Image 1 (cartoon, helix red, strand yellow):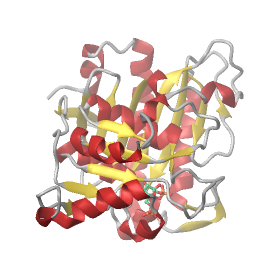
Image 2 (spheres, protein in one colour):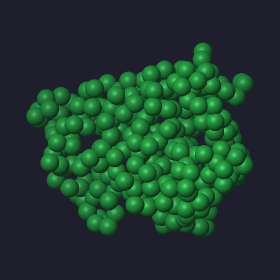
Image 3 (cartoon, rainbow, N blue to C red):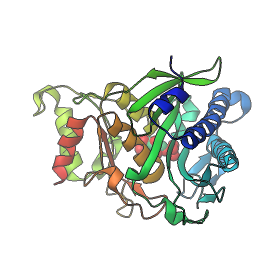
Length: 322
Ligand code: AFP
Protein backbone atom coordinates (compact mmCIF):
# COMPACT_ATOMS: atom_id res chain seq x y z
CA UNK A 1 0.00 0.00 0.00
CA UNK A 2 1.22 3.46 -0.90
CA UNK A 3 2.45 5.75 1.86
CA UNK A 4 1.26 9.33 2.28
CA UNK A 5 4.64 10.73 1.20
CA UNK A 6 4.66 9.04 -2.16
CA UNK A 7 1.05 10.01 -2.90
CA UNK A 8 1.82 13.66 -2.05
CA UNK A 9 4.84 13.57 -4.35
CA UNK A 10 2.77 11.90 -7.05
CA UNK A 11 0.25 14.76 -6.71
CA UNK A 12 3.06 17.29 -7.19
CA UNK A 13 3.10 18.77 -3.68
CA UNK A 14 6.23 20.89 -3.08
CA UNK A 15 8.72 19.45 -0.55
CA UNK A 16 8.10 22.14 2.07
CA UNK A 17 4.35 21.49 1.96
CA UNK A 18 4.96 17.74 2.32
CA UNK A 19 7.13 18.42 5.37
CA UNK A 20 4.49 20.71 6.86
CA UNK A 21 1.74 18.12 6.34
CA UNK A 22 3.91 15.44 7.97
CA UNK A 23 4.50 17.75 10.94
CA UNK A 24 0.79 18.47 11.29
CA UNK A 25 0.02 14.76 11.13
CA UNK A 26 2.59 14.05 13.84
CA UNK A 27 0.44 16.24 16.07
CA UNK A 28 -2.71 14.39 14.97
CA UNK A 29 -1.11 11.03 15.81
CA UNK A 30 -0.46 12.31 19.31
CA UNK A 31 -4.07 13.54 19.56
CA UNK A 32 -5.24 10.12 18.32
CA UNK A 33 -3.26 8.47 21.13
CA UNK A 34 -4.57 10.88 23.79
CA UNK A 35 -8.16 10.43 22.59
CA UNK A 36 -7.83 6.65 22.67
CA UNK A 37 -6.68 6.78 26.32
CA UNK A 38 -10.05 8.33 27.26
CA UNK A 39 -11.05 8.03 30.88
CA UNK A 40 -7.80 6.18 31.69
CA UNK A 41 -5.84 9.40 31.20
CA UNK A 42 -8.48 11.66 32.78
CA UNK A 43 -8.87 13.63 29.54
CA UNK A 44 -12.67 13.45 29.25
CA UNK A 45 -15.10 16.11 30.43
CA UNK A 46 -15.21 19.90 30.35
CA UNK A 47 -12.88 22.63 31.52
CA UNK A 48 -14.19 25.66 33.38
CA UNK A 49 -13.45 27.96 30.43
CA UNK A 50 -15.19 29.03 27.22
CA UNK A 51 -13.63 29.62 23.81
CA UNK A 52 -14.10 32.82 21.81
CA UNK A 53 -17.34 31.41 20.35
CA UNK A 54 -18.83 31.16 23.85
CA UNK A 55 -18.69 27.34 23.84
CA UNK A 56 -17.54 25.47 26.93
CA UNK A 57 -14.18 23.91 26.15
CA UNK A 58 -13.68 20.18 26.66
CA UNK A 59 -10.38 19.10 28.16
CA UNK A 60 -9.57 17.41 24.86
CA UNK A 61 -10.26 20.65 22.93
CA UNK A 62 -7.59 22.36 25.00
CA UNK A 63 -5.11 19.46 24.84
CA UNK A 64 -5.52 19.00 21.06
CA UNK A 65 -5.16 22.73 20.42
CA UNK A 66 -1.97 22.88 22.49
CA UNK A 67 -0.42 19.87 20.72
CA UNK A 68 -1.07 21.35 17.27
CA UNK A 69 0.04 24.82 18.32
CA UNK A 70 3.32 23.60 19.85
CA UNK A 71 4.30 21.36 16.95
CA UNK A 72 3.35 23.81 14.19
CA UNK A 73 4.94 26.81 15.92
CA UNK A 74 8.25 25.01 16.27
CA UNK A 75 8.28 23.58 12.73
CA UNK A 76 9.62 26.70 10.97
CA UNK A 77 7.19 26.15 8.03
CA UNK A 78 4.28 28.12 9.48
CA UNK A 79 4.02 31.89 9.75
CA UNK A 80 0.80 31.90 11.77
CA UNK A 81 -2.10 29.72 12.79
CA UNK A 82 -5.77 30.35 13.43
CA UNK A 83 -7.73 27.92 15.55
CA UNK A 84 -11.29 27.51 16.77
CA UNK A 85 -9.86 27.58 20.28
CA UNK A 86 -7.80 30.78 19.90
CA UNK A 87 -9.37 34.22 19.95
CA UNK A 88 -6.75 35.76 17.63
CA UNK A 89 -4.19 34.41 15.20
CA UNK A 90 -1.11 32.87 16.81
CA UNK A 91 2.17 34.14 15.28
CA UNK A 92 4.72 31.37 14.66
CA UNK A 93 7.88 31.74 12.50
CA UNK A 94 8.47 35.13 10.78
CA UNK A 95 9.97 33.29 7.78
CA UNK A 96 7.31 30.57 7.57
CA UNK A 97 5.68 30.24 4.17
CA UNK A 98 2.31 28.84 5.20
CA UNK A 99 -0.82 29.69 7.18
CA UNK A 100 -2.67 26.85 8.90
CA UNK A 101 -6.27 27.06 10.16
CA UNK A 102 -7.73 24.25 12.23
CA UNK A 103 -10.51 22.97 14.41
CA UNK A 104 -8.37 20.87 16.77
CA UNK A 105 -11.22 18.61 17.87
CA UNK A 106 -14.43 18.82 15.90
CA UNK A 107 -17.46 17.27 17.61
CA UNK A 108 -15.76 17.28 20.99
CA UNK A 109 -19.05 16.75 22.84
CA UNK A 110 -18.94 13.26 21.30
CA UNK A 111 -15.96 12.45 23.56
CA UNK A 112 -18.48 11.88 26.37
CA UNK A 113 -20.09 9.02 24.45
CA UNK A 114 -16.94 7.60 22.81
CA UNK A 115 -18.21 8.56 19.37
CA UNK A 116 -16.66 10.11 16.24
CA UNK A 117 -14.46 13.21 16.53
CA UNK A 118 -11.67 14.63 14.40
CA UNK A 119 -9.21 17.39 13.56
CA UNK A 120 -10.01 19.55 10.50
CA UNK A 121 -7.34 21.71 8.83
CA UNK A 122 -6.64 23.92 5.86
CA UNK A 123 -3.33 25.29 4.58
CA UNK A 124 -2.72 28.40 2.46
CA UNK A 125 0.36 30.37 1.40
CA UNK A 126 1.45 33.12 3.77
CA UNK A 127 1.67 36.36 1.79
CA UNK A 128 5.22 37.79 1.83
CA UNK A 129 4.01 41.17 3.09
CA UNK A 130 2.26 39.90 6.17
CA UNK A 131 3.38 40.28 9.74
CA UNK A 132 3.03 37.02 11.63
CA UNK A 133 0.36 38.45 13.94
CA UNK A 134 -1.73 40.02 11.16
CA UNK A 135 -5.17 38.32 10.95
CA UNK A 136 -5.95 39.92 7.59
CA UNK A 137 -3.63 37.44 5.83
CA UNK A 138 -6.12 34.69 6.73
CA UNK A 139 -8.90 36.51 4.94
CA UNK A 140 -8.44 34.68 1.65
CA UNK A 141 -11.22 32.77 -0.14
CA UNK A 142 -11.10 28.97 0.05
CA UNK A 143 -9.97 28.82 -3.59
CA UNK A 144 -6.52 29.86 -2.26
CA UNK A 145 -6.07 26.72 -0.12
CA UNK A 146 -3.10 24.57 -1.14
CA UNK A 147 -4.15 21.61 0.99
CA UNK A 148 -6.97 20.61 3.30
CA UNK A 149 -8.12 17.59 5.18
CA UNK A 150 -9.23 16.00 8.39
CA UNK A 151 -8.09 13.22 10.68
CA UNK A 152 -11.00 11.14 11.98
CA UNK A 153 -10.50 9.46 15.35
CA UNK A 154 -12.87 6.53 14.93
CA UNK A 155 -12.58 2.75 15.18
CA UNK A 156 -9.56 3.33 12.95
CA UNK A 157 -7.76 6.65 12.63
CA UNK A 158 -8.24 7.92 9.08
CA UNK A 159 -6.94 10.88 7.12
CA UNK A 160 -8.80 12.53 4.23
CA UNK A 161 -6.52 14.87 2.27
CA UNK A 162 -6.45 16.90 -0.88
CA UNK A 163 -3.80 19.08 -2.43
CA UNK A 164 -6.06 19.83 -5.38
CA UNK A 165 -5.39 16.57 -7.25
CA UNK A 166 -8.26 14.45 -6.00
CA UNK A 167 -9.30 13.43 -2.50
CA UNK A 168 -7.59 10.43 -0.97
CA UNK A 169 -8.33 8.52 2.23
CA UNK A 170 -5.54 7.01 4.30
CA UNK A 171 -5.64 4.75 7.34
CA UNK A 172 -3.17 5.06 10.20
CA UNK A 173 -1.20 1.84 10.55
CA UNK A 174 -0.52 1.94 14.28
CA UNK A 175 2.08 -0.83 14.01
CA UNK A 176 4.56 1.52 12.32
CA UNK A 177 2.85 4.89 12.74
CA UNK A 178 2.36 5.76 9.06
CA UNK A 179 -0.74 6.75 7.07
CA UNK A 180 -1.30 4.27 4.22
CA UNK A 181 -3.38 5.05 1.14
CA UNK A 182 -6.45 2.84 1.47
CA UNK A 183 -9.02 4.71 -0.67
CA UNK A 184 -7.36 6.60 -3.57
CA UNK A 185 -9.33 9.18 -5.53
CA UNK A 186 -12.68 8.82 -3.80
CA UNK A 187 -15.70 9.84 -5.86
CA UNK A 188 -18.99 10.84 -4.26
CA UNK A 189 -21.93 9.27 -6.09
CA UNK A 190 -23.81 11.95 -8.06
CA UNK A 191 -27.16 10.74 -6.69
CA UNK A 192 -27.97 9.67 -3.19
CA UNK A 193 -30.78 8.66 -0.90
CA UNK A 194 -29.24 9.72 2.41
CA UNK A 195 -29.39 13.11 4.09
CA UNK A 196 -28.00 14.66 7.23
CA UNK A 197 -29.38 17.67 9.09
CA UNK A 198 -30.26 18.44 12.70
CA UNK A 199 -34.05 18.22 12.38
CA UNK A 200 -34.55 19.55 15.92
CA UNK A 201 -33.92 22.98 14.37
CA UNK A 202 -36.61 22.54 11.72
CA UNK A 203 -38.93 25.26 13.02
CA UNK A 204 -36.12 27.79 12.58
CA UNK A 205 -35.19 26.94 8.96
CA UNK A 206 -35.84 29.18 5.99
CA UNK A 207 -38.37 28.19 3.33
CA UNK A 208 -35.90 26.64 0.83
CA UNK A 209 -34.60 24.14 3.40
CA UNK A 210 -38.14 23.47 4.69
CA UNK A 211 -39.35 22.58 1.19
CA UNK A 212 -36.27 20.52 0.31
CA UNK A 213 -36.33 18.40 3.49
CA UNK A 214 -40.10 17.91 3.40
CA UNK A 215 -39.75 16.44 -0.12
CA UNK A 216 -37.08 14.02 1.14
CA UNK A 217 -39.29 13.03 4.08
CA UNK A 218 -42.26 12.41 1.77
CA UNK A 219 -40.17 9.58 0.30
CA UNK A 220 -41.57 7.37 -2.44
CA UNK A 221 -45.03 8.97 -2.09
CA UNK A 222 -43.63 12.48 -2.66
CA UNK A 223 -42.22 14.31 -5.69
CA UNK A 224 -38.78 12.65 -5.35
CA UNK A 225 -40.38 9.23 -5.72
CA UNK A 226 -37.88 7.40 -3.54
CA UNK A 227 -37.30 6.78 0.15
CA UNK A 228 -34.47 8.61 1.88
CA UNK A 229 -32.57 7.64 5.01
CA UNK A 230 -31.29 10.13 7.62
CA UNK A 231 -28.04 10.10 9.62
CA UNK A 232 -26.63 12.61 12.15
CA UNK A 233 -23.27 12.11 13.87
CA UNK A 234 -23.23 15.60 15.50
CA UNK A 235 -19.63 16.00 14.37
CA UNK A 236 -19.23 17.46 10.89
CA UNK A 237 -16.09 15.40 10.47
CA UNK A 238 -18.07 12.16 10.86
CA UNK A 239 -20.97 13.30 8.68
CA UNK A 240 -18.70 14.48 5.86
CA UNK A 241 -16.64 11.29 6.10
CA UNK A 242 -19.81 9.27 5.48
CA UNK A 243 -20.62 11.51 2.49
CA UNK A 244 -17.13 10.93 1.05
CA UNK A 245 -17.43 7.17 1.58
CA UNK A 246 -20.92 6.52 0.22
CA UNK A 247 -22.52 9.80 -0.84
CA UNK A 248 -25.29 11.85 0.71
CA UNK A 249 -26.00 15.47 1.53
CA UNK A 250 -25.00 17.22 4.76
CA UNK A 251 -26.59 20.51 5.72
CA UNK A 252 -26.09 23.03 8.49
CA UNK A 253 -28.18 25.89 7.11
CA UNK A 254 -28.75 29.41 8.33
CA UNK A 255 -31.59 29.46 10.80
CA UNK A 256 -33.73 32.25 12.17
CA UNK A 257 -32.82 31.85 15.85
CA UNK A 258 -30.05 34.41 15.60
CA UNK A 259 -30.23 36.61 12.48
CA UNK A 260 -26.72 37.92 13.28
CA UNK A 261 -25.29 34.38 12.96
CA UNK A 262 -25.20 33.20 9.35
CA UNK A 263 -25.01 29.50 10.27
CA UNK A 264 -23.19 27.46 12.90
CA UNK A 265 -20.11 26.17 11.11
CA UNK A 266 -16.94 28.20 10.74
CA UNK A 267 -15.67 29.08 7.28
CA UNK A 268 -11.89 28.88 7.69
CA UNK A 269 -11.48 25.63 9.56
CA UNK A 270 -14.73 23.72 8.97
CA UNK A 271 -16.63 24.72 5.82
CA UNK A 272 -13.70 25.53 3.52
CA UNK A 273 -11.57 22.43 4.10
CA UNK A 274 -14.63 20.17 3.80
CA UNK A 275 -15.72 22.00 0.64
CA UNK A 276 -12.27 21.45 -0.92
CA UNK A 277 -12.36 17.71 -0.08
CA UNK A 278 -15.92 17.29 -1.36
CA UNK A 279 -15.37 19.23 -4.59
CA UNK A 280 -12.19 17.24 -5.29
CA UNK A 281 -14.30 14.10 -4.87
CA UNK A 282 -16.83 15.29 -7.46
CA UNK A 283 -19.39 16.78 -5.05
CA UNK A 284 -20.59 20.33 -4.48
CA UNK A 285 -20.37 22.69 -1.51
CA UNK A 286 -22.66 25.72 -1.30
CA UNK A 287 -23.91 28.27 1.19
CA UNK A 288 -27.25 28.31 -0.66
CA UNK A 289 -26.35 31.57 -2.35
CA UNK A 290 -22.94 30.61 -3.77
CA UNK A 291 -19.92 28.32 -3.70
CA UNK A 292 -18.44 28.05 -0.20
CA UNK A 293 -14.87 28.34 -1.50
CA UNK A 294 -15.68 31.69 -3.15
CA UNK A 295 -16.75 33.36 0.10
CA UNK A 296 -14.38 36.19 1.01
CA UNK A 297 -13.91 35.93 4.78
CA UNK A 298 -14.33 39.07 6.85
CA UNK A 299 -12.96 37.66 10.08
CA UNK A 300 -11.19 34.47 11.15
CA UNK A 301 -14.11 32.95 13.07
CA UNK A 302 -16.73 33.77 10.42
CA UNK A 303 -19.64 31.35 10.16
CA UNK A 304 -21.42 30.24 6.99
CA UNK A 305 -24.41 28.09 6.05
CA UNK A 306 -23.27 24.72 4.65
CA UNK A 307 -24.96 22.50 2.03
CA UNK A 308 -22.48 19.91 0.90
CA UNK A 309 -22.33 16.50 -0.78
CA UNK A 310 -23.66 14.62 -3.81
CA UNK A 311 -23.88 16.88 -6.83
CA UNK A 312 -27.52 16.33 -7.82
CA UNK A 313 -28.88 16.72 -4.29
CA UNK A 314 -26.91 19.91 -3.59
CA UNK A 315 -28.10 21.34 -6.92
CA UNK A 316 -31.70 20.41 -6.14
CA UNK A 317 -31.53 22.02 -2.70
CA UNK A 318 -29.69 25.17 -3.78
CA UNK A 319 -32.04 25.81 -6.73
CA UNK A 320 -34.75 26.68 -4.16
CA UNK A 321 -32.77 29.72 -2.91
CA UNK A 322 -33.02 31.51 -6.29
P1 AFP B 1 -18.04 21.18 18.42
O1 AFP B 1 -16.77 21.06 17.63
O2 AFP B 1 -18.09 22.43 19.23
O3 AFP B 1 -18.35 19.95 19.21
O4 AFP B 1 -19.25 21.36 17.38
C1 AFP B 1 -19.45 20.44 16.37
C2 AFP B 1 -20.22 21.08 15.28
O5 AFP B 1 -19.75 22.36 15.03
C3 AFP B 1 -20.22 20.26 13.98
O6 AFP B 1 -19.15 19.40 13.89
C4 AFP B 1 -21.54 19.54 13.99
O7 AFP B 1 -22.01 19.27 12.71
C5 AFP B 1 -22.42 20.48 14.74
O8 AFP B 1 -21.58 21.18 15.64
C6 AFP B 1 -23.48 19.75 15.51
O9 AFP B 1 -24.25 20.66 16.16
P2 AFP B 1 -25.67 20.33 16.82
O10 AFP B 1 -25.84 18.83 16.87
O11 AFP B 1 -25.58 20.98 18.14
O12 AFP B 1 -26.68 20.96 15.93
